[in-house]
Length: 295
Image (cartoon, helix red, strand yellow):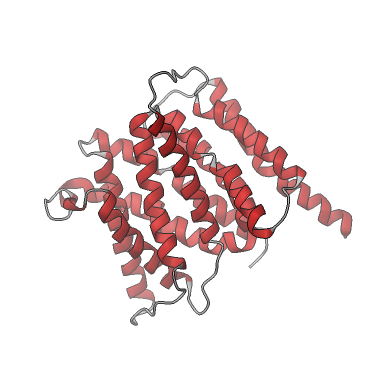
């Protein structure tokens, strides 16, 4: 596989996450609650993972990798849960900004794990990403009064848990292919979400009463695609670079909301998206110049 494909997989995985908030809003508009939509995402995602495994492997899965996959599945569920709590306590735009603290937290974790200092181009890129996030999320004119302290806390926890999720996905599990890894991660995430959200959607008929449509979309873009794409791309690019590349999630979220929910996009938001895209490409441009110089 060509080297440029691994960063692309990370970008595509982050893009799939960017679709989720809009689908959840559509589910809410159709009469469902956010916890119900999130629960349907994880249950349907596990069902899809099981079907993919059944049709491609047709053998009993063998578990391996110790706690790596357990922790990865748990972190997936925790991120979705705590981010939902943050959204319920503060404006969605501000919750996005809190979640996007994973860019520098992921870089910090990567530096600690590798015992290195951040590169100058990485710091510059993070500054671009942070500034672009503020513009793109439209929080400049947001009213921050009245937001409880635990709203800020949940937002920060979502950033930490997502950063940890990216780092865990950097670890490869020996003698386990991507399909088996997807199955176990989806399973442990579904088990964890049972304790955090609303498992009763299965037996009270809510899931089959129209929610399954949203669950199917959320399962594909929130479980299947990101787990597969991140599992392939992150071990090759590293947590630090993955944190930077994953910033594409916000521009995608804003753009999809505009297209499907007909939300208005301001000039400041467009400016923020452009700044984020610049910040994402800076490390790649710098690395390419280094390779050309050494060639």
